[in-house]
Length: 324
Image 1: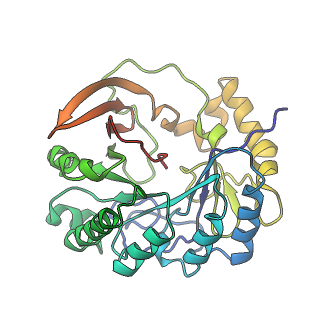
Image 2: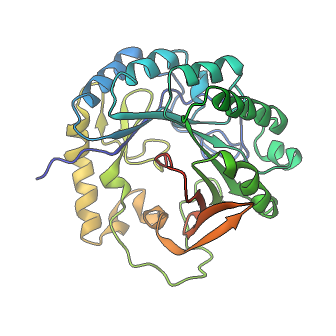
């Protein structure tokens, strides 16, 4: 059996969050969390970062999970240690509510590789309704400070990306949203709305159903929760399918043996329906491109892709960050 290495490591530094978004699968009012909350111990991330230093390929290190990374007390130490490895592309998703001036200045100084912002629309009324506890006014103020500081430093990084969930009430804001953030972004995405607990993408089929392929996440992504348990993928938010324990096993072992090998084998045999979590999941098709075209958006030559998971806009002249 060939040894595979994950191209993306999701390291859940914390699953605490400062928001309670209405449709968050973990913190939303209709969710039913089945695992405890906590912060990752330093000894665990030190072990993982040391193992990653042995990888021979470039790896994207995502310091987020079911929570807000800026709540993690040890985030600066983790970033600084990870940045010692030039093969790691380090960054995290954030709701930007805690991204104050001090944090922005620090992230520029430490040369963080990428940041991904979750902002739902351009109207404070709808954004603040869906993202309970957020203030779009504050979020935009924080993000623009980072953008302006980045320009003052003449820094090429971090690469920035923006994602908006297309709720029925906010779909009409998508065009304005793209125009607003595209000049500053490696890419902007408009994600399909999925109700809490849903992994379905084919409920409103408007294109020929794609032919099944084994889920790419099983070959590219490894998710480690704050307590060290390895989940099947980023969709396994409650670690219902525990692949192993990073406190006791190496990343290579978890990624190449046991349940992960079992899941790959069954998917390759077309037996997805026999697998827990996978049996009602369409995310394997999320990145499949339905159509692609080139657009001019306010003078920016842009590649637009429609996928099963939503729509992606990427400036044609700009290098993008790895999509987390």
